[in-house]
Image (cartoon, rainbow, N blue to C red; front, side):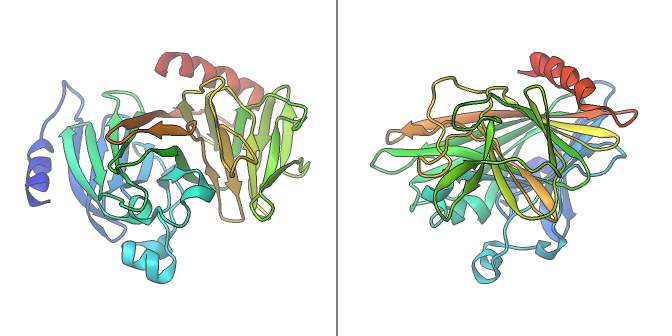
Length: 329
């Protein structure tokens, strides 16, 4: 760890061209040795100590697009075990949920080893998780100019048996905005989405007119209120969340015909959200990926912040989302 931090500090002063792109070691929200990557338009702050998650993602001079739970400030995996504390903000997990919920603690809330690769990129690597039989690696790379972050997730099978999991990206954002994604209606889910119920391992057609609307094949949700988990039949490869002056978009690959399994086979959704009275959790996931011993699987997301001069209607936001997606994916 000491050698890695020395390397990080040596890179902090490096700049690329006229833009002061830099990596710094900082203390943030009670966690020491966080890593801040910044360019002229945006910055991220990564916390290696508690799940290797992203604590901050925002435009320079702007608010954090991610939801922060200040009650967990400075927490460690011991607090996770003893007090039920969980990573917040830009957190990452391995699923599906039913399969891994009782054995994922090391990669979910454990410490990660950080390594700064350049003034705009870093890697975090988990401890080996012998229960799951994997080690997890993530590379965070900020664009040299734009408010665009590439998140590359990897998991390697370190066991002597076949392992099958999915990447499950669980990003918390605050209330007050509008969530959007394109959906594909099916016979089972006429609106293109369903409510997930883990008590019965089912997903049922669902529509809440007080929080939701459909504009063509785009579902729009104003989160809040009673806790609800929804899955979306979507091949769009994006989820967007628009606040007053900024829109956050997550882009990811959709694999036609692949096996997406969120709930012991009872539901198959590439996109999921969970919303409650505090936040909305945006949860795209990869297909289920089978790894032989020694094999590595990967999944990439692009996170983009789009400044908005004014509050815009959904019909005007969607062309922006999809035009940007054509450029970044």
